[in-house]
Length: 331
Image 1 (cartoon, one colour):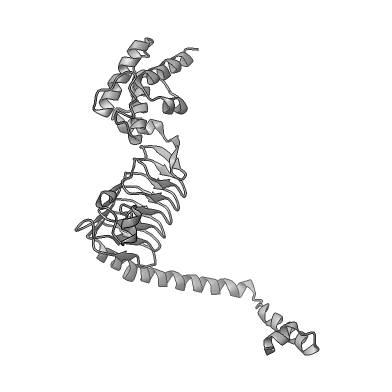
Image 2: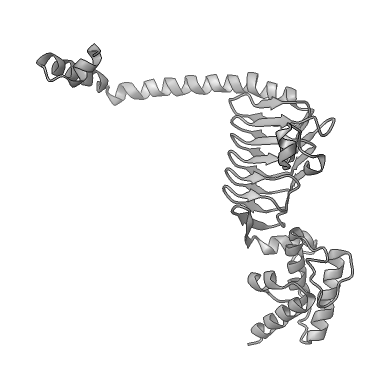
């Protein structure tokens, strides 16, 4: 038995005294008057601030800018050197903050110069990771919270045999990501290849986004689903340059409602669609749905509940939603 174990379990006076002595040393604290502690703290904070200022300005930011193909004015980093691997184009706009320590991985297998573009006034927080096989585009005024993960290349093929053989991902699985302006991506969110996040949208904490996100929408979950629409008035202003558009006169005829809905659907889809045809089968995508709803509400001067709109799949269904909204408005 070792001496340390004997002392730890023995009940002899010597062992008890040794244990008391050890506890006294481990629990020792030095009492100091506040009058002395405050100046010590001030000196420490001044030294720490000066040290990290020098590290940031003369080490971290110059090294990050050296990686950039192009960068604007006011580009800033935190006090860590970002991790950049591979060879690609890193294009950063004006007044951009890349905080903490982030990872940028350019996979040159799929494109000669894979490109990551970050727009003006965007903030990327600590721990974010970008895997760029072809192209990731981030707009202006975006907020990307800590530990978000964006990748346009999956890294490995989904086919088990190809994966076992060590093959890379299939080229058709490498699809660009587009984050439009004024998007907020929450902590730990994951953006999959081929996703477009519409302007003004919010991706909730931990969301796994595998499909396009319409503009001015909050999504969350795994896989991410619409939680609610955001700032409808702002979205209308974006879709129509006229501020405060006057709604069209309410249409009381169901046939005229159907004709109007068909016209809007055909313009949105760029293709003909019948009154009873499922417009999702005709090519409607999730990113088209919010602009479609806003246009219908503007043209008919109604407000359609979100659950009713999401249940509608044909022009007749949408015309029924309009008639129900008009009936509620005239009660």
